[in-house]
Image (tube, rainbow, N blue to C red; front, side, top):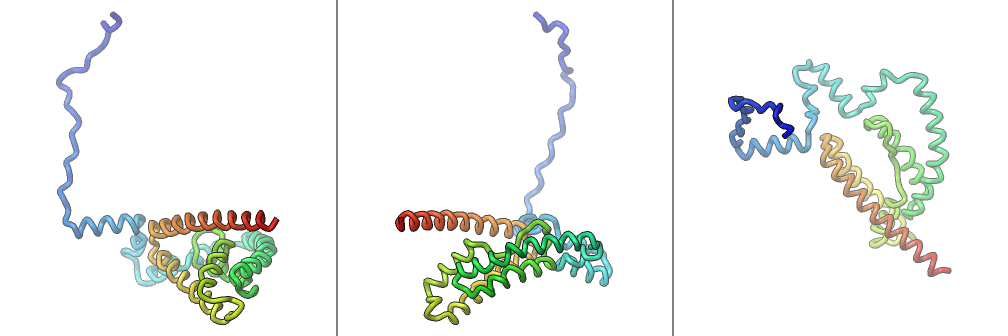
Length: 217
């Protein structure tokens, strides 16, 4: 029938040994491991163990300010490339920053500050070479909408400016906390939530602009 030459396995083969179920851990110990795995999966403090005090100081500076890690290997060729890139981006950032400031009902000079100061700070404290840092149109519209509900920028520009400074200050404080503790999960979750909200607001703004244009015509 076609199965005469089939070799049946012997019946005395030992089965694979099953792994034992680990004993239950206390609640606090389990919670500690879960929090550590969630917020610090790469154990950022591991590199500081069994290191002399001078080495810990250097590692701590590199941990908070990555520029101390890559600056010694920075070459003149990198400087030339960065100079050309900076000139190219500046030609776009200058009018873009002024436009974003006007969207937020702020002085144009603040748009220039927001276009140049954040990249300079991120160059010293950031760790990604591909991340674009700066203002966006949707954030400017959100600022104008949020503060405009409380204060009129034309009637009380000083108070409007102070509220804008306060809002951006606390936004920076809340954004710097996960950077300080290197909370990758929280940082990714916050970025995802912000992106979803910004995408929804972008769709709303585009619909509003289209409706206003159609009603005007």
